[in-house]
Each structure stands twice: as C-alpha cells, then as structure tokens.
Length: 130
Image 1 (cartoon, rainbow, N blue to C red):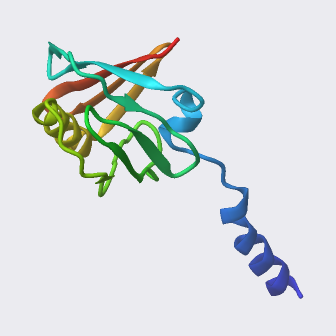
Image 2 (cartoon, rainbow, N blue to C red):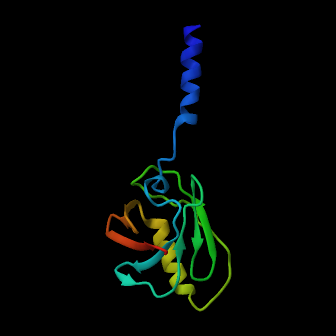
Image 3 (cartoon, rainbow, N blue to C red):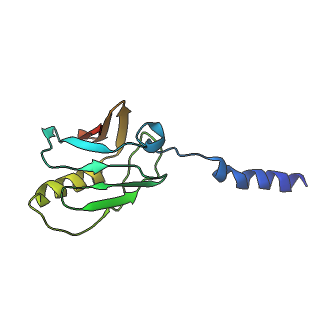
C-alpha cells in the first residue's frame, strides 16, 4: 500500500509543475516589439508573444512564425522556428531577426523591456507594446 501511495504521488508531480518559462516571469500576456538587434535600432517590425505555456509566436517583418519554448527561466531556446514563406522588401531584416531569435540562450524581463542574449551579449531588445 505504501508503495502505491509513493508511486501515485510521484506520478502527480508533472501535473503540479507550473509554467517555468520566461512567459511566467513577466513576458506572458504582452506583445513584445523588437527595437534593437545586435546593438542597432531595428527599423522593420517584428513581434514576439508567449500565447500559451510552451510556445512562442509572432510576426517577423514578412511572415508569421512560431516555435516551442520549454526551457526554464532565465534560459531561452526557441528550438525549430516555423514560419510562413512570403517574400517582401524586408526579407533581409527578417532573416537576421529569426537567426538571432534561434541563437539566443538567456532571457531577462525588466518591466516593459525583454532582453534576449547569448554568450556574446545582448542580441535582441524588445519593448512591450502599449
């Protein structure tokens, strides 16, 4: 009987765990607009949202994108980013944005600012949309 209770308690642990991603640490329920990429103002429009636990989504300059997000805060790992395939004049900016998004490893939420970094430093700086 005791073994059964221990086993039942252990099987319930994954169900008790909440969202440990950046979404739960201030990034959820906001639309983040990219303002800076690799130290340079970003002139095109790109957004990032955390629509539900385990997911990111947004609009790159040309296409919508989404990816999984399951690592605990402060880590950031977008994994494989899926995007639609429309061409537009800002395709170079989109490529730079999506490449950087796929390479960052650390997130930091500071009020209305979201900073995504890698070992070289800050790569993407977002501001919460009004």
